[in-house]
Picture 1 (cartoon, rainbow, N blue to C red):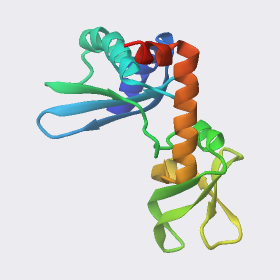
Picture 2 (cartoon, rainbow, N blue to C red):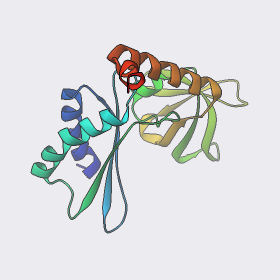
Picture 3 (cartoon, one colour):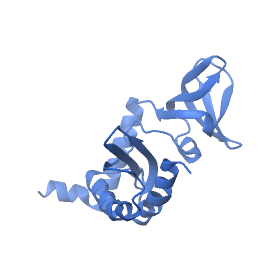
Picture 4 (cartoon, rainbow, N blue to C red):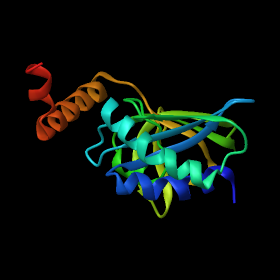
Length: 178
């Protein structure tokens, strides 16, 4: 089992118990590694307090499991507006939004594609490639990286969801009363 798969197995139940959905786990760095954990609330928001809460929940579990050899830094963050698309569920959830894909192999002489997420079809990522008529289907394991393209509409939707989340949790009132 790959290290990142082992980390997901450790981190995902902790994140879910804390009320978050795991977006991505990634190890970066050389001698001192960084364990990057991206997560979000079910409403697709994640603020600094949420990051701190998840970090506090993960630290003792990671300390006990000790899955990474040597020293490392834990970095908990939101996926950001131009979020990565990692799981089939992501491609289903973000259907209709512009995105960029990079494959781990050549397909018709290319690895990079820009277009619109068209969902999931028969367990494969459906993608409407810019300038092409037919929808392409890519097995998830062929996708090295994928992320949404930052657009004004995406920014507007993200800001609206964040505002609604703050209102639902009462965070707006706390900010204005300080």
